[in-house]
Image 1: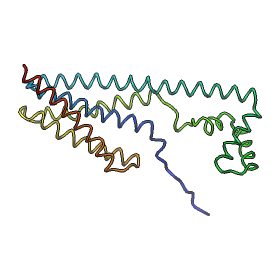
Image 2 (image 1 turned 90 degrees about the vertical axis):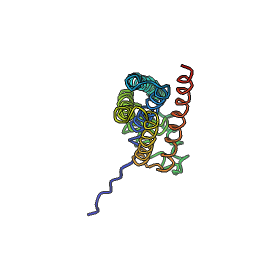
Image 3 (image 1 turned 90 degrees about the horizontal axis):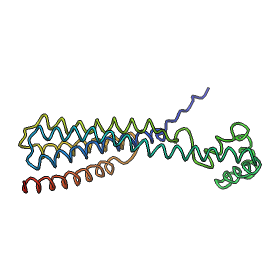
Image 4 (image 1 turned 30 degrees about the vertical axis):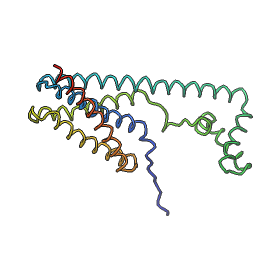
Length: 231
């Protein structure tokens, strides 16, 4: 008896992976940049911590709200498209069958076989067949607003905690430098983890996240230094 072949694909991870990576990356970059900017303005540790915690709370809520609104809009569009497709199936099922056949023929299936496959799929679940093959909507790729919002908020908070812990552990005289260095390390590790989970090139992913993080922290440090000098 032949053994069953089970394949595990990464497409099911796309929704939560995108939200989690974006949230953690933003948590590290925005909080570290805020801390570096405030520290560069010669602020004391307590003021830096207050700014960092405020940035964590505000950023997590902003990420959650932004993801929820964005993904909800996508979900609304999907529902509207499905409702329209359902009505078209009720009004002219034969045309919808031919439409499905033409899709399969365009993909390289012979006409007779394409019609047979389309008929069987429509007999099983016509709306699901059209949603998947005509609209590109499936259970794996469908929008999940609550999942995306929670993943973004939680991952942002996790990312933001990392530079805050650095503030607590290092001497006040090297806050800006220490937060910058450790945050770049955290970003590199995040890039490696995201690439590994998503099956993407590790080096490219790591360079991408660390470059933009370094740029953001460098610019905020410059702003903080200018204000600190002025004050």
